[in-house]
Image (tube, rainbow, N blue to C red; front, side):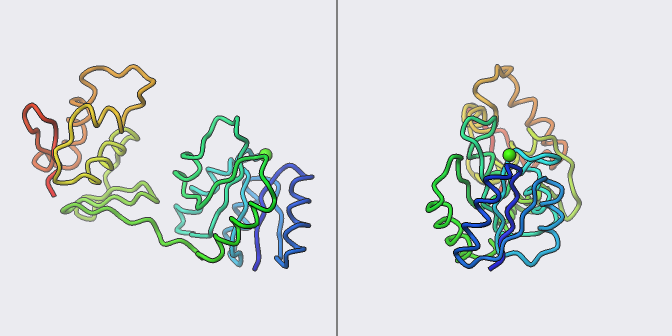
Length: 218
Ligand code: CA
Protein backbone atom coordinates (compact mmCIF):
# COMPACT_ATOMS: atom_id res chain seq x y z
CA UNK A 1 0.00 0.00 0.00
CA UNK A 2 1.40 3.35 -1.01
CA UNK A 3 0.42 6.43 0.97
CA UNK A 4 0.99 10.05 0.06
CA UNK A 5 1.60 12.35 3.03
CA UNK A 6 1.22 16.08 2.35
CA UNK A 7 2.42 18.02 5.39
CA UNK A 8 4.61 21.09 5.61
CA UNK A 9 5.73 20.63 9.22
CA UNK A 10 8.94 18.74 8.55
CA UNK A 11 9.12 17.00 11.92
CA UNK A 12 5.56 15.75 11.76
CA UNK A 13 5.98 14.68 8.13
CA UNK A 14 9.12 12.79 9.03
CA UNK A 15 7.52 11.11 12.04
CA UNK A 16 4.55 10.06 9.91
CA UNK A 17 6.81 8.64 7.24
CA UNK A 18 8.86 6.64 9.69
CA UNK A 19 5.81 5.39 11.56
CA UNK A 20 3.98 4.35 8.41
CA UNK A 21 7.07 2.71 6.94
CA UNK A 22 7.42 0.64 10.10
CA UNK A 23 3.87 -0.56 9.49
CA UNK A 24 4.87 -1.68 6.03
CA UNK A 25 3.51 1.21 3.98
CA UNK A 26 5.39 2.79 1.12
CA UNK A 27 5.32 6.53 1.80
CA UNK A 28 5.90 9.59 -0.36
CA UNK A 29 6.06 13.08 1.10
CA UNK A 30 5.07 16.45 -0.29
CA UNK A 31 5.43 19.71 1.65
CA UNK A 32 3.26 22.06 -0.42
CA UNK A 33 -0.27 21.97 -1.79
CA UNK A 34 0.73 22.13 -5.45
CA UNK A 35 3.31 19.36 -5.07
CA UNK A 36 0.81 17.17 -3.23
CA UNK A 37 -1.77 17.74 -5.96
CA UNK A 38 0.73 16.89 -8.66
CA UNK A 39 1.75 13.64 -6.97
CA UNK A 40 -1.87 12.67 -6.25
CA UNK A 41 -2.76 13.23 -9.90
CA UNK A 42 -0.15 10.79 -11.05
CA UNK A 43 -2.01 8.06 -9.24
CA UNK A 44 -0.44 4.98 -7.78
CA UNK A 45 -1.53 5.84 -4.23
CA UNK A 46 -3.98 3.95 -2.10
CA UNK A 47 -4.63 6.87 0.22
CA UNK A 48 -3.49 10.39 1.01
CA UNK A 49 -2.96 12.04 4.40
CA UNK A 50 -3.40 15.74 3.84
CA UNK A 51 -2.74 18.72 6.07
CA UNK A 52 -5.09 21.71 5.67
CA UNK A 53 -2.77 24.68 6.11
CA UNK A 54 -0.19 24.20 3.40
CA UNK A 55 1.96 26.57 1.36
CA UNK A 56 0.66 27.29 -2.11
CA UNK A 57 -2.75 25.62 -1.92
CA UNK A 58 -4.77 24.58 1.11
CA UNK A 59 -5.61 20.94 1.71
CA UNK A 60 -9.26 21.74 1.02
CA UNK A 61 -8.41 23.20 -2.36
CA UNK A 62 -6.29 20.15 -3.15
CA UNK A 63 -9.20 17.77 -2.45
CA UNK A 64 -11.70 19.92 -4.30
CA UNK A 65 -9.43 20.01 -7.31
CA UNK A 66 -8.91 16.26 -7.29
CA UNK A 67 -12.63 15.59 -6.99
CA UNK A 68 -13.34 18.06 -9.78
CA UNK A 69 -11.00 15.93 -11.90
CA UNK A 70 -12.93 12.84 -10.80
CA UNK A 71 -9.99 11.54 -8.83
CA UNK A 72 -11.44 9.58 -5.88
CA UNK A 73 -8.23 8.83 -4.01
CA UNK A 74 -9.21 8.25 -0.35
CA UNK A 75 -8.22 11.35 1.64
CA UNK A 76 -7.72 11.75 5.38
CA UNK A 77 -7.54 15.43 6.33
CA UNK A 78 -5.40 16.65 9.23
CA UNK A 79 -6.23 19.98 10.77
CA UNK A 80 -5.59 22.11 13.81
CA UNK A 81 -8.65 22.39 16.03
CA UNK A 82 -8.46 26.15 16.42
CA UNK A 83 -8.16 26.75 12.71
CA UNK A 84 -10.67 28.78 10.81
CA UNK A 85 -12.15 25.62 9.39
CA UNK A 86 -14.13 22.87 11.01
CA UNK A 87 -14.87 19.26 10.37
CA UNK A 88 -17.83 20.05 8.16
CA UNK A 89 -15.55 21.99 5.79
CA UNK A 90 -13.22 19.02 5.63
CA UNK A 91 -15.89 16.57 4.66
CA UNK A 92 -17.73 19.10 2.53
CA UNK A 93 -14.72 19.52 0.27
CA UNK A 94 -14.77 15.84 -0.60
CA UNK A 95 -12.38 14.36 1.96
CA UNK A 96 -13.28 10.93 3.32
CA UNK A 97 -12.23 11.38 6.90
CA UNK A 98 -10.92 14.04 9.20
CA UNK A 99 -8.57 14.09 12.16
CA UNK A 100 -7.86 17.04 14.42
CA UNK A 101 -4.32 17.90 15.47
CA UNK A 102 -2.85 16.93 17.81
CA UNK A 103 -3.91 13.39 17.08
CA UNK A 104 -2.88 10.03 18.41
CA UNK A 105 -0.78 8.06 16.00
CA UNK A 106 -2.73 4.91 16.89
CA UNK A 107 -5.98 6.61 15.92
CA UNK A 108 -4.45 7.88 12.70
CA UNK A 109 -3.36 4.37 11.80
CA UNK A 110 -6.79 2.92 12.58
CA UNK A 111 -8.53 5.57 10.44
CA UNK A 112 -6.07 5.06 7.63
CA UNK A 113 -6.63 1.30 7.66
CA UNK A 114 -10.39 1.83 7.64
CA UNK A 115 -10.04 4.12 4.63
CA UNK A 116 -7.92 1.58 2.81
CA UNK A 117 -10.43 -1.16 3.50
CA UNK A 118 -13.19 0.95 2.00
CA UNK A 119 -11.06 1.71 -1.05
CA UNK A 120 -11.74 4.57 -3.41
CA UNK A 121 -15.13 5.98 -2.44
CA UNK A 122 -18.10 5.83 -4.69
CA UNK A 123 -18.62 9.10 -6.32
CA UNK A 124 -21.23 11.00 -4.27
CA UNK A 125 -24.68 10.35 -5.63
CA UNK A 126 -25.93 12.75 -8.24
CA UNK A 127 -29.36 14.14 -7.35
CA UNK A 128 -31.93 14.01 -10.11
CA UNK A 129 -35.37 15.62 -10.13
CA UNK A 130 -37.10 15.60 -13.50
CA UNK A 131 -34.71 17.18 -16.00
CA UNK A 132 -32.63 18.76 -13.22
CA UNK A 133 -29.49 17.07 -12.07
CA UNK A 134 -27.08 18.19 -9.36
CA UNK A 135 -23.68 16.67 -8.76
CA UNK A 136 -22.53 17.47 -5.19
CA UNK A 137 -18.96 16.38 -5.86
CA UNK A 138 -18.48 18.81 -8.70
CA UNK A 139 -21.07 21.36 -7.62
CA UNK A 140 -22.46 21.15 -11.09
CA UNK A 141 -26.11 21.59 -12.02
CA UNK A 142 -27.64 20.72 -15.34
CA UNK A 143 -31.10 21.19 -16.78
CA UNK A 144 -31.84 18.77 -19.60
CA UNK A 145 -28.09 18.17 -19.93
CA UNK A 146 -27.25 21.87 -20.22
CA UNK A 147 -25.14 23.25 -17.43
CA UNK A 148 -26.70 26.06 -15.37
CA UNK A 149 -24.48 28.62 -13.65
CA UNK A 150 -25.65 29.23 -10.08
CA UNK A 151 -24.25 31.42 -7.33
CA UNK A 152 -23.23 29.66 -4.12
CA UNK A 153 -26.51 30.64 -2.44
CA UNK A 154 -28.67 29.58 -5.37
CA UNK A 155 -26.80 26.29 -5.45
CA UNK A 156 -27.35 25.68 -1.74
CA UNK A 157 -31.03 26.53 -2.08
CA UNK A 158 -31.50 24.21 -5.03
CA UNK A 159 -29.61 21.39 -3.34
CA UNK A 160 -31.86 21.64 -0.30
CA UNK A 161 -35.01 21.72 -2.42
CA UNK A 162 -33.82 18.78 -4.50
CA UNK A 163 -33.12 16.73 -1.38
CA UNK A 164 -36.72 17.44 -0.38
CA UNK A 165 -38.31 17.26 -3.81
CA UNK A 166 -42.09 16.86 -3.71
CA UNK A 167 -42.27 18.11 -0.12
CA UNK A 168 -43.44 21.50 1.04
CA UNK A 169 -40.47 23.35 2.49
CA UNK A 170 -41.18 26.38 4.66
CA UNK A 171 -39.31 29.68 4.51
CA UNK A 172 -38.10 29.16 8.07
CA UNK A 173 -36.68 25.80 7.13
CA UNK A 174 -34.90 27.32 4.15
CA UNK A 175 -33.50 30.14 6.27
CA UNK A 176 -32.24 27.57 8.74
CA UNK A 177 -30.59 25.32 6.25
CA UNK A 178 -29.47 27.60 3.47
CA UNK A 179 -28.68 30.87 5.21
CA UNK A 180 -26.09 31.32 7.91
CA UNK A 181 -28.04 31.99 11.09
CA UNK A 182 -25.28 34.21 12.45
CA UNK A 183 -25.64 36.68 9.62
CA UNK A 184 -28.53 39.10 9.43
CA UNK A 185 -30.68 38.01 6.57
CA UNK A 186 -33.16 40.30 4.89
CA UNK A 187 -36.72 39.10 5.63
CA UNK A 188 -37.45 38.67 1.94
CA UNK A 189 -34.17 36.87 1.14
CA UNK A 190 -35.92 33.58 0.49
CA UNK A 191 -38.41 35.13 -1.95
CA UNK A 192 -35.63 36.95 -3.74
CA UNK A 193 -33.51 33.83 -4.18
CA UNK A 194 -36.47 31.67 -5.10
CA UNK A 195 -37.08 34.24 -7.85
CA UNK A 196 -33.49 33.98 -9.09
CA UNK A 197 -33.63 30.22 -9.02
CA UNK A 198 -36.92 30.05 -10.90
CA UNK A 199 -35.45 32.03 -13.74
CA UNK A 200 -32.69 29.48 -14.05
CA UNK A 201 -34.47 26.19 -13.53
CA UNK A 202 -37.87 27.07 -15.00
CA UNK A 203 -40.62 28.90 -13.18
CA UNK A 204 -43.10 26.00 -13.28
CA UNK A 205 -40.75 23.65 -11.44
CA UNK A 206 -40.78 25.51 -8.16
CA UNK A 207 -44.29 26.08 -6.82
CA UNK A 208 -45.36 28.49 -4.12
CA UNK A 209 -47.64 26.77 -1.63
CA UNK A 210 -49.60 29.67 -0.22
CA UNK A 211 -49.02 30.20 3.48
CA UNK A 212 -46.76 27.15 3.74
CA UNK A 213 -43.67 27.56 1.61
CA UNK A 214 -42.31 26.09 -1.60
CA UNK A 215 -42.33 22.78 -3.33
CA UNK A 216 -39.97 21.54 -6.01
CA UNK A 217 -42.01 19.30 -8.29
CA UNK A 218 -40.74 15.77 -8.16
CA1 CA B 1 0.54 22.97 7.97
